[in-house]
Image (cartoon, rainbow, N blue to C red; front, side, top):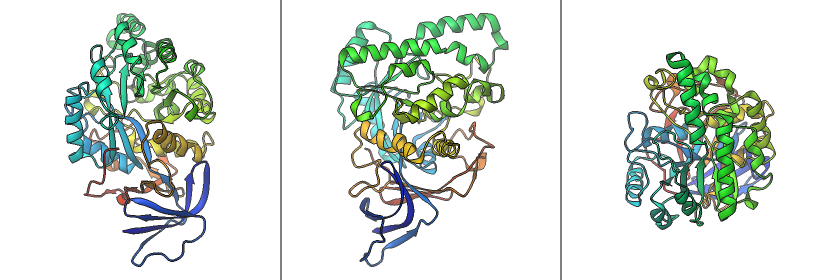
Length: 441
């Protein structure tokens, strides 16, 4: 099956230029700034005049909650949300139930995904205080990387043994993606604010409990360990200005210590807790306006390498609980690209930078072969965007199982028109294909 994407504004490898893209079956056959001649008979032509054509987004940090927490989300619902948001590949975290901390559980999850996933996928192997040998044994073909929690979050997979950490950072042949918050500092803050506020506590306390100090101290430790053992460390969801001093500026390909930021930490700040409350409660916490602005600047100047959501659904009922009882996490996968395109409209970032941080760099860092780029030989994973049509977020157009979003009521200045996955149209104008085209990467 041939498809011809004609007259698109293709955003790829640092440029935005008008081009035509020819695909054959699941791969890109040609990319040309001139109209292609001698096209095959029976080809499907998609007129992309007025549309942006981007590589499919690769989100390296999502939580789909299956197995064990399907009442919040599952592989089918969240992979459909991914496609509706222009996300064609996800790397999913291990804090499910049971946690993905044994090779057996990882293989069970892979088997389940083969039946359930609408988008492409890979899974992390979760680190614990006592599974170093299995972490060494697990292959890149079965897991995309290792996940380390230096601060407890949903699922409580905290690694706090000094001896275990030395061993884990010494594994050497796999990326360690780390959640960095200092557990001792958080527990001290939690005890203080519980004593002081009790039932009067609100989510505005969240950045004080999961504080800037907790983030900086933990990230400093992780970076120090990575330097000591020459580990490829990837620090997840940066949230503070201070942490940025620990990272180098420049091309990601020359770094062995990299980092990501979430659209949540680029969009919201602590002033927003007054309006959104627990709906924007996440770990690490949304911090100050100054932190948010520093993160945006670090993204532009290549201190931050990747944009990833930390998509983490919880039910509406759970989020309505009192602050101390409400879980941390926000469903953002469907709207991450729209948020970043909005920031581009505000001149906070350019379109080529969005593609670099959401497609090229994720593919390169996690060695996702032949994806993340629009060039000959790569898989045909695309997202088509209309920059002249708006999208208003409402419950009626949400795909995540939890059926709420902090972006409800927000109007974005772009519309995701269609998502193509492995050469097939997987999403168009609010409709997901009934066929599953996702594969393990």
